[in-house]
Length: 143
Image 1 (cartoon, rainbow, N blue to C red):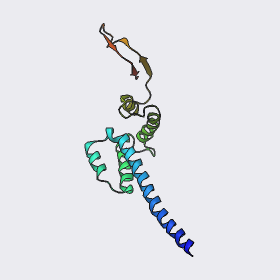
Image 2: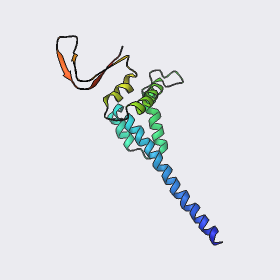
Image 3: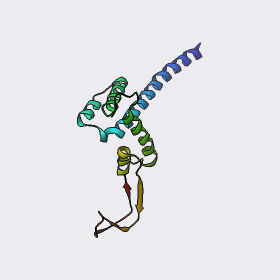
Image 4: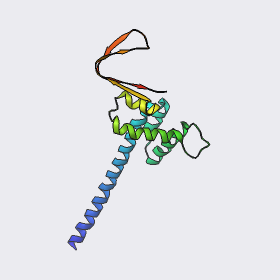
């Protein structure tokens, strides 16, 4: 009988703490979502996000966020959301540092047509005779 009481107490404690861990993980996912989208949000959207308390309210905000940026609302798919999320997967893998400007270029424009890497060399600017000496860098060219 004593073991049964301890077992029930253990189950109760486990259920309380496991639900707290699940809530912490959910908040962490929303924090990451905000961090990955904050740079692209309007000031009003940032203010609206910060007052949201429930998971349902955050999900509704995310839906409205992507719907507002959908270029063709008559289709079943949200083309912006699909493209952004595909680009985001690549960015998470290749440009995990949030301060890397390539991260934001890739999110906005996708894969560049041409990438040119250089390491301490003179680079011509605007097809003129001006040369600028730079350290290590990369130039992305889009069509």
